[in-house]
Amino acid sequence: MSDIDDLTDAVLTASRLLVAVSARSLAAVEETLTLPQLRMVVLLDSRGPMSLTALADLLEVNPSTAKRMIDRLITSGMVDRAPNPASKREVVVVASQEGSRIVTEVMSRRRAEISTIVARMPEHLRHGLVEALTAFAEAGGEPRWSARDEAPERTRDHAEVD
Image (tube, rainbow, N blue to C red):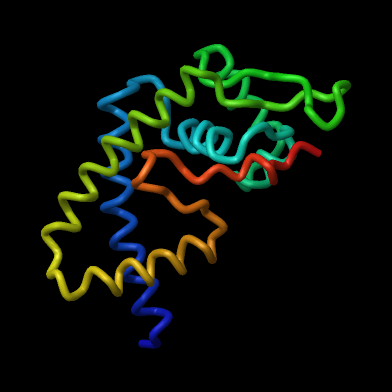
């Protein structure tokens, strides 16, 4: 087996744990929101207003799928439509105040559970995990999560609003 196969297997195993942590943290806060819907709200909360097309591209779904998700999230009060700051004629999707609150609470619960798991790891392996997971997240285009302010680093200046 190659190094890439070993790493892939390790990441897949860890992802099962992280999905379980994510599901538990979401269920504790919001019973009606699905993990894909949460992912959309997290993207909007961390990256700022986005066009439907940009959001669909980031989620790697068809625009029609993204539109259906947006419609459900608007109905539940998690996201809103707003005028595009770059062109007032167009509309973008934004996380609502309630959506941002849910993201903050879910991430706080998720962080607490992950912190407990990390504390059980041998101390000498923790630093290598930080470097590896940081590189993994960067390779996947995920904004870094900041423990200092319990919010993702904002990339709103670079939000894709078409």
